[in-house]
Length: 547
Image (tube, rainbow, N blue to C red; front, side, top):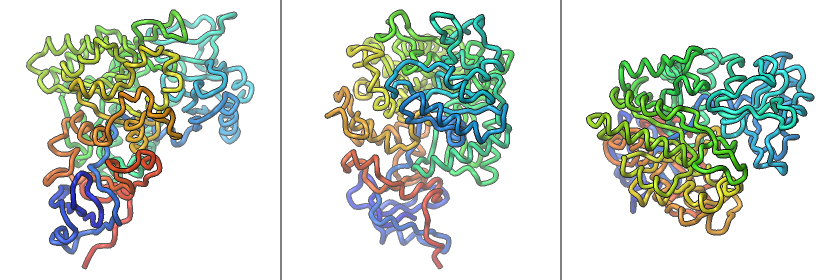
């Protein structure tokens, strides 16, 4: 039972009572005490604000767990700093073992060009090294890794990928974009089942400490699903997971669920048996499939209708054949599975909308309420923006992408094209449904940072004044809806969650600041007081049972 707080959006409610994982009372403290029994745990909030349980509609649990144990390159201000952090980790790693890291972003360096491996190779001669860019759509390998991968001057670019090369010699620079990363990653040892479970456990703990009660895990395989089931059985799964099966196919070789022969046993299994709702004691739902259309904007892999403004001739990459996107969508609609497609560039988004429109027409009986999703929907051509609402497509977006990308996005796109980027308000006004997340570990796992970004479109210092393309700013209520009711709708869960109401799931987050009334700057420093899932405090310290 939560007492002494402020229930968001109400005039005088201060308490919420929960029983059997459901909300049974919302009102005053005195009214709530009528529900106290010998088994009740009281949690005094001292004025904290209770909001519906916050959901991240697009994160990567395994990636977050790996990021917490690998070399952290987020925030590095130069390639030299990347090398220093990596070589320090290598010094404490047995020789010949891989050193893996993630988080570098050349856009944050004074020298904006992609790095080359020579300096890194000189400092790490005894270890193969692979360092993923912050967006996960490019990676840097050192000489030892190139040798193990068998990548040479003569290695051809794979479909949907690029090997960056020295323009004078044609030799690989060490940077691999999108599907080309598989050339290196296929020789990196996979974590064992037990290691994977440990990474998921660590990631979930990080999530509940940041106020999340549910995560839409964007791309899982059968082994990851098995890990979730085992963790739930042991009482070690503190939040809900809405799992998206890693779809891919033969044209997306880096898909973790796709084997060396191009088969996808995870997708095939769920196409055969259909959705699975409420597994693992109600904590796990498997009814969505994750596909990829293109790469990322920061690594110039996002597929654009016209060339990048800062790289003439480059229009990005389609990492999955459009015909395959259509075919898999049709199969999923027939099986009752939701389709969620990563699309960032305006060409990538158009390809997905075209595939969706064709599939919905082909399977009209299965399309009602399909809630197809575009993950990211970052850059939309003006003609395509209204199509999401018309087709019933959910825009699953990540507000912190806008504030991270705004220092360089206009250089990639040009001013006019950038007006259609991260266009939350335009999408909302068109009638499209928004669902918000972070894309962790690409961005911080904190939903409070996402709320701040959605409301202000400013960096942590409050720049630019008024916000970047401020006409796209959201109200606090609209921003909060993206992480609550919007995310619930995107997962077919609006009848059970996303709002605070009698009979709904007792998934709640208590915050030190009211996201609807606080100065938005306060959200970046606000604290999570408690995270409640199924009526149980999974983060925070409740009082002992009452006698």
